[in-house]
Image 1 (cartoon, rainbow, N blue to C red):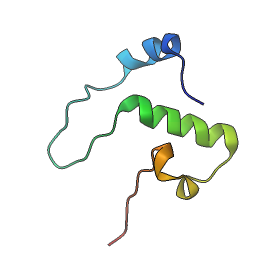
Image 2 (image 1 turned 120 degrees about the vertical axis):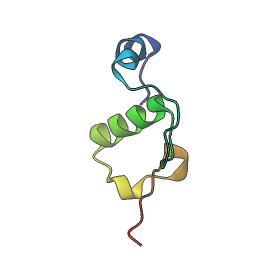
Image 3 (image 1 turned 120 degrees about the horizontal axis):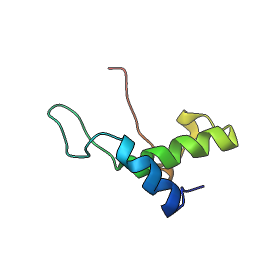
Length: 61
């Protein structure tokens, strides 16, 4: 479930600047917030998200 534009307008100013910093990959903040909200609402485990839902993989190497 995605944030409405009105709710996003309230959240966006609270987040850090979206410009990439050295050493890390950046995703769109709205995509991250939407994915977190989805996992909380549905009870889905992070590991079971599909790539289309904005899956973010961190692998232990």
